[in-house]
Image (cartoon, rainbow, N blue to C red; front, side, top):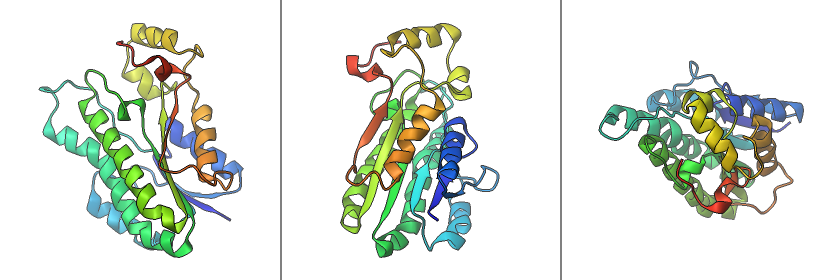
Amino acid sequence: MKTLFLTGGGGAIGSAIKNLFLARGWKVIAPTSRELDLSDLDAVRTYMQPYLDGFDALIFSAGRNNPAELGKLTVEEIKKTIDINCVSVALICSLCRAAFEKRRNGRILGISSLYGNISREGRAAYAMSKHALNGLISTLALELGPFGILCNTLSPGFVKTKMTLKNNTTETLSALERKIPLGRFASVQDIARIAYFLCSEENTYISGQDIIVDGGFMAGGFQHL
């Protein structure tokens, strides 16, 4: 039985990923935010110690996104967002690296965002963290490729989740939907299916890529909201 380590398994996208992998016969280790505080790097090291024999795949779906414009955005919020969205990913990958190299097989997937490529007012901390995540995973693809490990990011567009509804007004949501060529927000299942493919044995050669899943939104270039 293959084993997946998943952060953010309690979120909308993370839950869909967890459920799909379980349905496909995988064992899934998905600590809650109470069990694993990704902003506490010492706690991350302690939590991961029993699992250093390795996993078949790592998926990082945990994310922090509290919009605020620079000037109102505290340094503490920036640091916490980057620790959760990126630094903890680097730490966990570092801790698991030896086992992956020994096995000479594996998949690493970071759930990024369109804001890992572009940005938007009030998204400084989030965009910083996702740009950094994309850079990290690209570097891992170079370093771990010789060991047969495929590393990618998956960047959802606008997904129908509580976070999307919380961070946007009704008017903004309607405007966004009109700009998506497919005419709808993604479902969490849309994202989970791509995540599964990228981490499955069906993916034999995609590595070092940021897979954008946005219903065609980015094809026309970023349009001001």
